[in-house]
Amino acid sequence: MTLSKFTRRLVAGAALTVLSAATHAQLKVGIDLSSTGPAAAIGITSKNAMLMWPKTIAGQNAEYIILDDGSDPGAAVRNIRKLISEDHVDVIVGPNVTPAALAALDPVAGSETPMITLIGSASVVEPQAGKKVWAFKMAQTDRAMADVMTRYMANHGVKTVGFIGFADSYGDSWLNEFTKFADLRHIKIVATERFNRTDASVTGQILKLMAAKPDAVLIAGAGTPTVLPQRTLVGRGYKGAIYQTHGIATPEFIKLGGKDVEGTLFPTQPVVVARTLPADHPSKKAALAFANAYEEKYGKGSVTQFAGDAAGVYPRLQDAVARALKAGKPGTKEFRVALRSELEHAHELVVPNGVVNTSATDHVGLDQRASVMGEIKNGAFVYLAQ
Image (cartoon, rainbow, N blue to C red; front, side, top):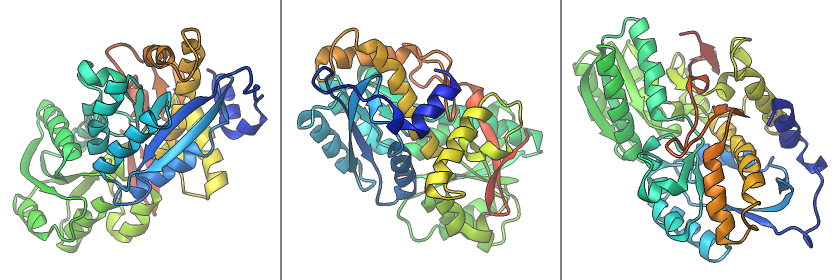
């Protein structure tokens, strides 16, 4: 799919030809998002992007059924079971928090329904075996993000790092991947602390980190809960560089953090920094087209990486559904199985947050064209040269 075709379909979906329901089965897309709760800043922007999707996919009338899991993995599983058993959807999109996506593997694999998640951790798709063969992922992996982050650290004299991350699978995955690349680039992790998404205070953990006197601190979390440890660091007088993960790139993070998050360094994907990407960046045109369309609808400065990931689901489906229809009609097991298979065959597919090339062993398909460094400068996310 060319960029111009994707942009036209995304922004002017209503102009697409709608084929008669009498001659074409309806495609059902079940969507589970965290539109409320601690991860709401992520889920809301994902939902906003989905509301821009055209009403047809590969010529099929499409029904989008969107449910809110309240940022609760248990609720996410209940939603997904309902979408599969009661609504008989052809594909699941979401969840957008790692614990929920991991918990969803049982129902999607059991029903042989492909799932395209919106999480950062690669744990839901790696290794490609067992239940995980039914899962795909839109966001760049935390492995790739840790790679670009540690490269930037090494290039800017960081020798020691203090780590504080979510006390869940997101934090586990980031600590694991960051440790690997830190070792590779001779960066020493001098202290490790954890916190919960709902914590009201992290003073104890921050004091322990600061006692280790690291050159920089990495906060491994997502959404607005990550403001708390950064605010505590600043309030306690920490003067080193503060890094966050790609999970913080929402307007709510900047709004809630204010001056305390100014200067934050973080890895991200092209949509977040679309306007300040170099002209020769391979994803600039796709990222800018979506960012402009999204902000025209939802307001200046409103675009997020999570919106870009959600927008990218549509061309992924458009690409795979067109081929899967040769094996069966929507609503059948044959179609779902074929759709899972065809999602493995994206080739140089342009989406807002990168270029996708999937395979039977790679259910993400993004390379370094989907990884850049960003900074919060004057209350905005901007591209940061390596």
